[in-house]
Amino acid sequence: MKLTQALLIEDNSYGNKAYQELVSKFKQQDGEQIGYGQNGSVFDMGVEGWVFKVTSDMFEMEDAQKASGKTFKYLANIGEAEEHKSGNAGWYEVENLRNAPQEIYNALKDGSVLYDFDMYVNTGDKKHLKDTPDKIQAGGREYSLHNFFTGVRKEMLSAGIETDNIDLTGDLNNIMMNSKGDLKLIDY
Image (cartoon, rainbow, N blue to C red; front, side, top):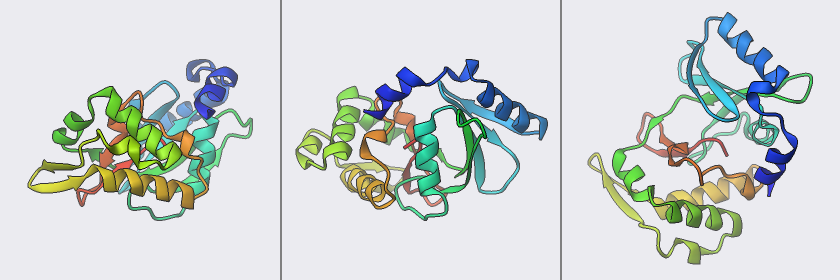
C-alpha cells in the first residue's frame, strides 16, 4: 500500500527542508495558514474559490498532478500543482470547501464505516457497503453515502489515481462539501 511506502521513505514534514521552504514562501506572500496535518499545511492566499495545500506526501502530490485541471463531482477539484525542485514536497491549488453537515460525520464516526469505505474504494466490491448507512438526512437534504462512495471510486479510476491512495481511515473530515452542498473527498 502506498501509505506504508510513504511512511517508510518520506521525511516528517517538520524535518523536510523542501516542505519548510514552501511553507515559508506561502507565509511570506501573506498566506493565512488555515489548517495543517501530519504531512501538510493549507493556506488561504486570497484567491476566490481556492486554497493552497503544501504537502510532503509525494504520493498525494502525484495524485494532485493527475487530477489537476479536471472537473470532478465527488473528488475535490485541483487547479495548479507544482512539485518542489528537490522532489521532496510540493503544493497544489484545491477548491475551497467547507465542513459537511454534522449528520454526515455522525454516520461516519464509527471507524468500521470508514474502513468499509476504504475497502470498497480499493476493491469495488459492494459487500463492503452492506453495513454502511446509505441515506442521510441533513440540512433539509438527503445524501446517499453509497452514491458518494461509488462516485469517488469511479472518479479516482478515471483520473488514473490508484484507489489505495484514499486517505480516510484516520480522519472523517476528509469528506467536505462545496457551496452547492455536494459532498467532496479531499486528500485522495
